[in-house]
Length: 272
Image 1 (cartoon, helix red, strand yellow):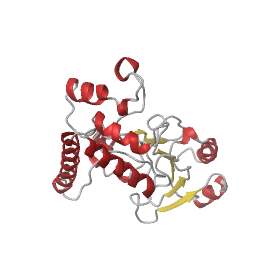
Image 2: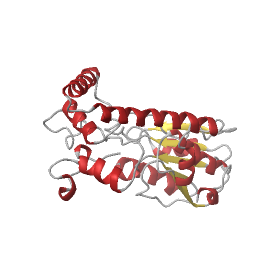
Image 3: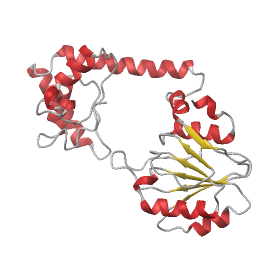
């Protein structure tokens, strides 16, 4: 995935996303990368600036990008205008047919790889192997039978909006209960009362970015130092707790990999 950063000696005044020197010259020719090149969201100011998304899309394709990423708040009008700009650029010769054919072949190859990987995994999903390698557990988890899992709500990210995350779909079993609590409207006392005589698992996402989340979690682990804290974002902040698990992501595969360690299906050594 390209970044919208300027590296003057390489990209001049252009961001890397729009730089043939970066994408075709460095990434393809010098480094030998043969996979699909995906752009970061094109509506970001660092990419589109005053030129707009449609024109930026044309330039990204011409530079060597294969897949164009538009963010969560780009709608039909922007997509239609972008398609029209690409068609016009192809008709005028600004976008050579060979460049578009290469991009289409990269996308087709990616789709085929995803299908093949899914079939070979016999029910596994693409990305699970990587998620299992990424997850890290520090400390020793206590028995978690009948645990209360408290997922502490975090604001949605600006790039993708509100997306599902957490352990509820994966960390299940007899007596296990999962609750989602907003630190601005919920009380840690309520969570502690619900967790009385039960193991406690606290799930957060990018807690380092949200003071209200950190205050909420600190109140929980202060009263329950035996709690297990699961960070599904960047593990920058860690409270004082018995066990701390970092999944390095909040996708479904990350939740599954985290739940496997918590349930003892896989050992920490397997994740190394």
